Structures are given as C-alpha cells and as structure tokens.
Length: 115
Length: 114
Image 1 (cartoon, rainbow over the protein chains, first blue to last red):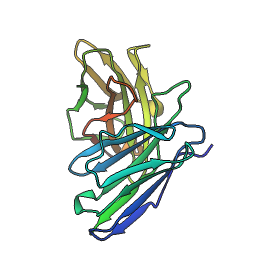
Image 2: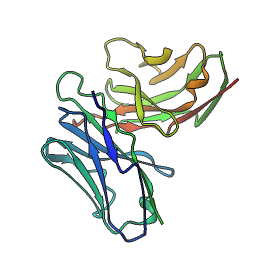
Image 3: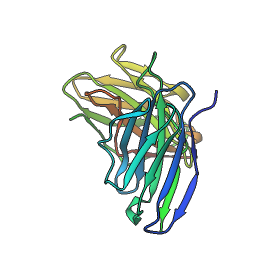
Image 4: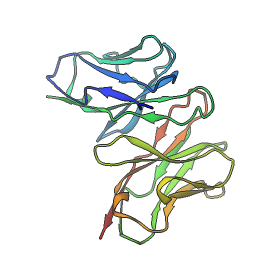
C-alpha cells in the first residue's frame, strides 16, 4: 500500500512569512509524529497525534509552531513568522495502534529553507 | 532520561569488509532500541529493532545488532559491506512515559570505498 507522503517536498520562503507543511499518513494509522532534522540539532521530536488530539507537544520549539490533524488522517504543521533557524527537513511518521505499535514509517520529508 | 550515544560520526570501510557502527544507550530499564538508515535524499527506513525477545537481532540487507545489557550497547554490524550501504545510520531509543516518540542519536555516516 501507499506509504507516508508529505508535501511540498521543498519550500523556500522569506523570513517572516508563514508556511504550512502537510503529511498524509499510512491509511489506518492513528498515531502520527512530526520530527525535524537540522544540521545543528540532528533529529528531534516535535509533536505526537493520537487520532485528532495531540497529547505530546513537548518538542515544539516555540509558539510560532503549531500543528493540527483532522479526520484522524492528514496533519498540517504550521510555522508562523518563519526565522532562518527554522530551516530544516521536517519529517512525518505514522504507526499503527494494533500489533507493532513502536515501528514508525517515515515520509520523505519537506525541506524548508528560510531566506 | 533515556538517550543513545553514537560513538562515531563517520566510518569508512572498503567494499567487502566488515561494518561496525557503535551505539551505547542510557536507560534504567530494558529499552526498545532501533537502527534506522537514511540514504541520500531518501526517507528514514527501519533496519531492525530490539524489544527483549532476543539479544541478537537480524535486520534487512544483512545487518544485525546485538543487545548487551552489561555494556549498555547496541552495536550494528554487517559481515561484508556493499557500495549501496553508504548512508547515514541512526541509533534510536523509545523513552518510557508512553507515546512511543523516538529519541535519535547524532548519526553515523558510513562511506564505502571500492
């Protein structure tokens, strides 16, 4: 079946603009995670969704970052008033809540460059 | 807090020689440990996982890892490197507290030379 998809694959924006990044998880996966991969910080957890709720937002770096999930499927990560330090690859992953709940399947990522 | 330390940022081997990528973990209990691989411009792919069923874990593409509690290690090995193994490898732990969020090591970049 189809894997996790993310769009856009690349995004270039100007400092101060808002951006939206989209994630389509594997069909039927109720758990969804966002991570960020940057040169300085490596791979970091941002937020976790179970269904449409986000019980763990501990990794969001500032209040400029927010995320939502609708219909238990698609998720959108929004960064407001982007800064140059937001430049990174944003990765989305999903996992099943039946059987193997620990294995996460990753999308190809969105590469964000803030000029 | 649970964490993992990858002892080498870069490893270079010749094709056909063994691969050893080292990872130590910090955990007060028996953790769930993973190795993920990231090929250039590709997504992260699970290589193998340890969840206490067996200390020697076999993964895809001929990789395996051994969980050694006495050494708090989870090193990744492969008997014979192939050019296609060149990639970045991440040792990963799931901390306690629920939600299964992944904590990544800093990564080891593996280069394979002909």
